[in-house]
Image (cartoon, rainbow, N blue to C red):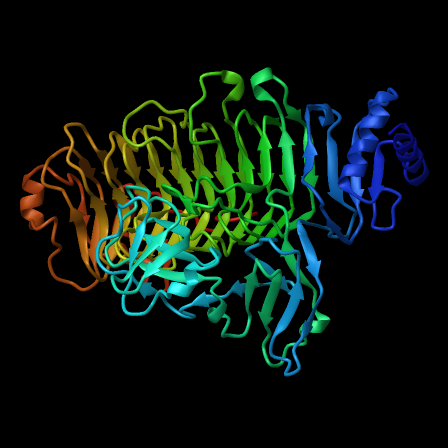
Length: 637
């Protein structure tokens, strides 16, 4: 061990001036771990300067997670930086290359792995290829209500599920249940009763009649180009290339590590990983794993780990990195993490979600609480490839975070979700700022009960403002733009533009004393505004908003009490004719005391049909006090 340390010290002094270490495939420092150990050794020799580790171009395959502990911290004036060498983009990979061969007809590529080896993703020529699936397009449909049996029993139709699929335990069913998915091995199949027994139990709240599902990793499902199959018992990987593809010239990678980087602080002891920066690196090829009973989560794929996980991290940063081709969440700052920055990154082609902040449980010990992170100017897209219920940015029990100028699109569930307490119980999520985000093409008609921005619980001081939201499509119900769900309270929602959602631009399930003002809700399909539960307190104040639509109705579900305030709004149905105010005429609605100061009038947008929501100088909305919303600053700067 002393000899290795001496060699590392010699390498450091030989390749770079003080404060800078260079990692290169040619060495002498060939990995992040060797650079970390060199810094540890130098510190033992009394060197206390700031350290920068520059990583040259190339692929660095991890044999185990890269772990930083409190002793690897920097300080406010002397951070430890792990960054790409100027002008280069090194790749940190958790995968392994596979060497295979084509059959005589050139139609099937196979490779040998150790029997018992298990992985659930494959990347060929830099792209993710599909695990063998049936049906190839669309879904099977279950029969009747989803199971509440333990273990889960899938009632299938016809011969959709085959008895032989239960033989190896490697064939999995993925069942979509409202706002979550269930993924489990098939244990047994009874064709006479049309019942397949899964390996694990259901989550009681996740139910759907005639649920959609598909099957993965069945040997007979390997029937299309760009699909692959693993026979774990035989240790054989099979891939079906496209007829024009030269797979022998491409690199085939199977992921081997679930986590690529871990910041391992000990917050319960007051020991944190502090002042470490990752900049300009690319992280790829993490695996997702599950136990023998499969994966079932209540919502948001909350239990799925992240490729980059931090516990007890303080004032660290991830800047201008790329996270791609991962099987799980990309980044997680969990227990005892505070005041970290995630800035200017691209997160794409991800099995689960993008960024997870906080944890589901509340912490009594202040040292273990999570708060005050900055998540800005990131581009997140093509998420939820494996777990469709995963979220773009998920904030759990964490407060006073800034989520701003992010661009999130093309995922199957909510783009930004904040809060993890249902109803009015105490929580540790408050004072969050969600602003200047561009969120679009959310949902993809995969799941239901979701929105571009989703909140839970009492959140005094939380502000949702200046966000651009459009194209939110759920499977059945619940494709909303801004969705304050159970107990969402004491929040300010202002200066947002929401258009082309399926169910409504704004929906409050239940909550109290929210303020919704100076927003534009436009051209949503079914309703423009929705309110569900009647409660004895003030739900919200809705004022100085513009609502314009050309389909559906203005108001959905429950508006038959007076526990809300609406005033100084402008409403316009481009189809002409009277507007239905929750089955009441405008005159009766006003007679109830609703919408004092509001008008029904054309807002005179520059080009409403083209979604140009700038107002003409003579707009009646301006006379009501509406403040124009500038959309030029939305998304990353």
